[in-house]
Amino acid sequence: MNILVCITSVPDTTSKISFSDNDTKFVSAGITFIIGPYDDYALARAVELKEAAGSGNITVFHVGEADSEPVIRKALAIGADDAVRVNSVAKDGYFVADQIAAYAKTKSFDLILMGKESIDFNSGIVHGLVGELLGIPSISPVMKLNINGNEATMEKEIEGGKETLQASLPLVLGCQEPIAEWKIPSMRGIMSARTKPLQVIEPTSFSSGLEFEKYELPTPRTNCKMISDSQVEELVTLLKSEAKVI
Amino acid sequence: MSVLIFLETTDNQIKKSSLEALVYGRTIASRSGGSVTAVVAGNPSNLSEAASHGASSVMQISDSRFSQNDTQAFAEALSEAANQKSASLIVMAKSVFSDSIVPKLSSIWKAGAATNVVSLPESDANFSVKRSIFTGKAFEAMKLTSERKIVSIKKNAVAVSLAPAAGEVVAFQPSVSSKAFSIRTVSTEKATGEILLSDAEIVVSGGRGLKGPENWGLVTDLAKVLGAATGCSKPVSDLHWRPHHEHVGQTGIKVSPNLYIAIGISGAIQHVAGISSSKVIVAINKDPEAPIFKAATYGIVGDAFDVVPKLTQALRNSL
Ligand SMILES: Cc1cc2nc3c(=O)[nH]c(=O)nc-3n(C[C@H](O)[C@H](O)[C@H](O)COP(=O)(O)OP(=O)(O)OC[C@H]3O[C@@H](n4cnc5c(N)ncnc54)[C@H](O)[C@@H]3O)c2cc1C
Ligand SMILES: Nc1ncnc2c1ncn2[C@@H]1O[C@H](COP(=O)(O)O)[C@@H](O)[C@H]1O
Image 1: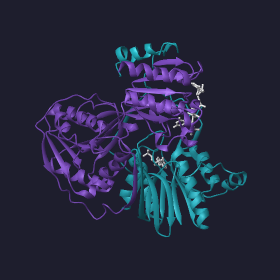
Image 2 (image 1 turned 135 degrees about the vertical axis):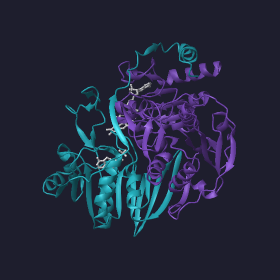
Image 3 (image 1 turned 45 degrees about the vertical axis):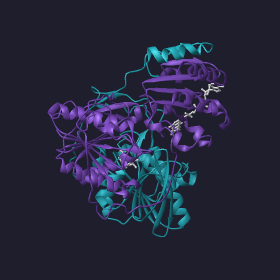
């Protein structure tokens, strides 16, 4: 089984976000970058599927500049066999989807796994766009995935519940927990990751219908009004007459 | 500009967030005198609300295969409906369902899409909208420059207001391709009669401070009095005290209710990211230093086992 896992390199979830240059640039100084949490679930499940099958190949795919190579190496340490990096800033979801589809067309993957959403850009559309570009079904958010021959059985989240689905490979899936547990790279994994192949390719040219203008931070909340624990009635009054939310 | 709005249903009801999408679309259409058409599948019991919120025409899909919620079929149907109405904008509420429709529709209908949008566009000509990014930690302004546009809006981004329109309901039988309905649904498990977390106006959420699943009555009793949905922090769902679909935060459900009540939740940055666009946040925590108080509008320092039953009772007496 050949699996392509698409990963983002995103600020660690504890990061404080800030911008510079008139709110047009993300400040990456002091930020630790990690594999996107949902992408990390996708990768973990890919490694499990390969182990269970006893054969196959996992390629990690990333659109980004050279500074994201540590994150790609981490994915290799977790268990991917090789990696491809498209040497360009990820302009938006359309651009990324185009790069993934262009590469996937040159290979034959049984599964293309992604996160259901990136935690920086949060567009949640890359898997769907890739499915369209390749003319194969895309499903998201997938919480369970089992493969039997050419058939996939999946559990998909729906609002207020879940659905069990079946479809034939190849498929593009957006993943989320509890599809697998995040994997911590072993010492051996880290050593072998250093020599696994990481191919750098140039982007296909592309123009989308989106134009970035600027960033903005939310206005901070004003100070929290404290209420004594012996006066919960006061909270009820405030919610009714001051905040008007009940 | 003529606008098409997709109305999503749950438990045979048009969702509140879809009515927000309708109001958003109506507001844009009214600037330039375009038409407002809504599309809905099935026969929701509150169908008349579409007209009272400004849809002059509702295209109703009765084809029972659409009850499977196949995203490909919906994307194809919406594209066809938009073409029939010469709409140049399709609006829908952001949801687990619409998240999968948007990219498919974008490709089929050849339109640029912006998801997670929290503001109206500057104007038809300068279609600049604000999106929520970094999981609620920031926004970005971005312009949609394509001829046709798709927008999915975040819950509570616009205030719902009535603007009754003629509201004729017309039957709509979309012609779907062989790609639609190719994914077989084996089974569906869905809580009915429960208030959807992502669509709720009020959410009561519990964290590890509640000590165990046996104490969840505190949360559910309070929620019941308020007509609220229930949520939890990530460790709580990891420990299987509560189902996974209740987990709120950066890696769970992002909520933006009018009122969010956090009980025994420390307020880790990953949790706060998922609730930061709530209008009002109430924190109940025994630790005065808990970071949740930095995110909250109102706070009570105290033992949840003591405070929450008192609060539930006070609300029962006054609502
Ligand atoms: C990559 C990543 C992603 C994550 N994503 C999420 C996410 O999406 N959502 C999320 O919630 N977390 C997420 N987390 C976990 C997050 O970092 C915190 O660990 C988690 O939110 C803490 O949950 P908690 O507040 O319930 O528990 P704790 O941090 O253990 O806090 C319990 C709180 O209860 C209070 N308390 C104890 N007893 C009482 C009492 N009797 N009465 C009142 N208060 C009491 C304590 O003072 C404390 O503040 C993520 C972590 C990582 C690493
Ligand atoms: N720059 C990127 N490189 C590789 N994969 C990406 C990139 N951006 C997004 N993806 C994948 O697409 C998924 C959805 O991203 P998004 O549509 O931005 O929310 C992510 O979880 C990744 O798996």
